[in-house]
Image 1: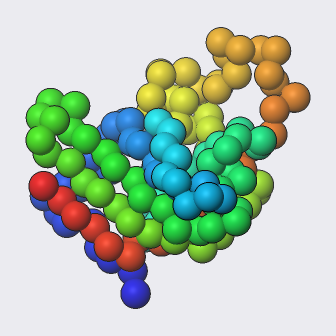
Image 2: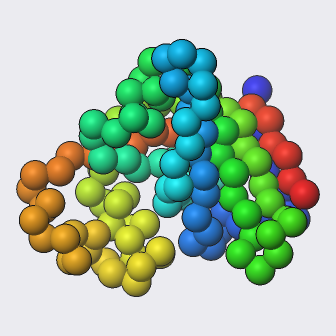
Length: 135
């Protein structure tokens, strides 16, 4: 069953708010990374450069937590616990460009790092929320 995002916190998923994604290492330890993210109305999308630890963790164990803190009130946040239910490379460039526009104001993600254009590949992890905590 998919958990719903409460109306009281939809502003945190509709704005470019940095989130911390927590994945599980092979030894069971948590591993966290700050990420850009988006929400399609049902699932969280995280776009990550291939070869990163979080990618290896998510591909081995789909359990994940995403924590987004209100930049205006650090005691207001949303924690989304979920599972990756789709891993895809389809549309990764369009997605990272849309995130770049939202988070940095650049339509082209590679505008400030042209050496990575055509070299880097990325993967989109789609996360189904199973539990949502909002404070």
